[in-house]
Image (tube, rainbow over all chains, first blue to last red; front, side, top):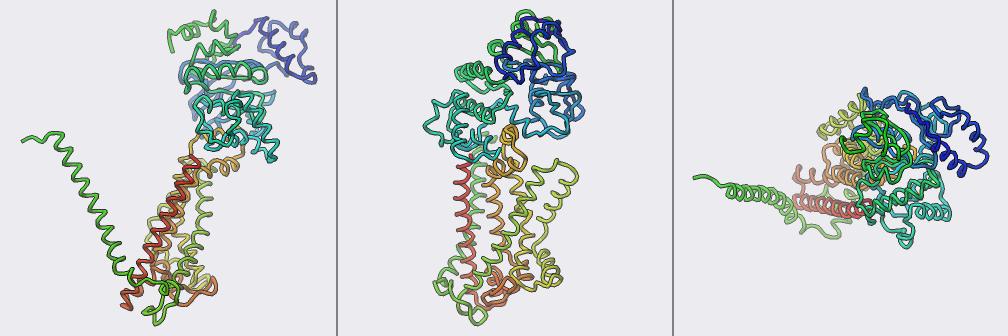
Length: 298
Length: 278
């Protein structure tokens, strides 16, 4: 596991958590204890600061490993970018976090992956709950061929919410969070497919937010968009991290540098380096990372 | 002399045109021939009266009713069974031995000539289950016959639903069944509908299987266990036994027009549906 002895980082994490969690959950975060247990390393207390924690996690397609022996922790209310060359397992790892990879036949996992201190690959896990907590935005904007309203109301309706006023409110809030409300509030009945690519992607973000998740996974959310739509999504990510934990896979180095606080560099299914984004881009400790972020390979 | 690429291109285009027009002409000739001979004998009383003297006189109303009943019942039975089988095959199992056996089975079923289904229906429904020559025996037999069509077309339609819809639905916390009903079936509906319409057409035009299971009574049916004669069977008997060629052509015309109308309506409906979901 890559070491993270960075004091500043831990302090900033704790600050952000302190702002966000209500007091009942604050019990587990004891500022002094954390400062005492410096350096902050892999021997974490049972309940850690992280919201997502991979513990020697490997994911196999048949006998081929998609990712192997990943150990990392992802912190709440931050943007964590996963970067790396194509086929390095970035998406595999991302898609393991809400178990959407389960749709593929012949897969199996080794090691553990925790979300909110729950081992999500254990038998007891309720997949419906997990996926409501961990929303996902995909590479290509993929709204359903339904109206804007029905797209966003899809998630709440799955939970059995039928009351028009409740749905209306959820839809409005979600669209507002996704910075789309002002553009579409007058025609919520319009087909989602009539929107532009960038609007569609923000609609997909709104749809993912409609179940009030804690974590938002984004799998190259801007790769199909033009620069203007991309910058809108990036601005949106900036605001969303106040309320959500965001994990974003991106091929775009500048994007990772712009939007993320933490960055993980994957290569050939392994986690090479995981650190503050500023460190990864300015002073990486690994040669491979350096080569990749400076564009010498990948 | 060498043939230039441009010349060969022109030749091929002309040749393909010729072949296509021959196909179309044959089709138009058959339909035209029947309509020319049959349309003159169709009038209101022909459509609404019972037949007299074995079909030499009178109309074909009982046959229209019989056709609707047998076909309708067959599709009502086959459609849910077929669609649910498809859902199981595509959404609830992984590709494996079982699915390939089921798929192989349906393919074999599709290749069996209809007279064999008739024979099976006769032995099983009519004799063993003591249903007699009846609407219900005929409908059950036809249902088995069109099942492969429905399964295959629905499977194609369901597989064409983009994977991303499924992922999004799961990602929002849907169960498998919610995903199937709210996303997959909705998007696949035009394709499934097309399969059902195709099987309606097959049921209406089926003769051999119906002859052996639904019988050939000329009366108006009064219960599901009554024997009926469908339009295609009526046409067959009229012409085969030389009873009345005029009425045979007229019946055939009614058959052709019915199938044409069903197909056009279905096409328009499906197009509207497809526009809605796409």
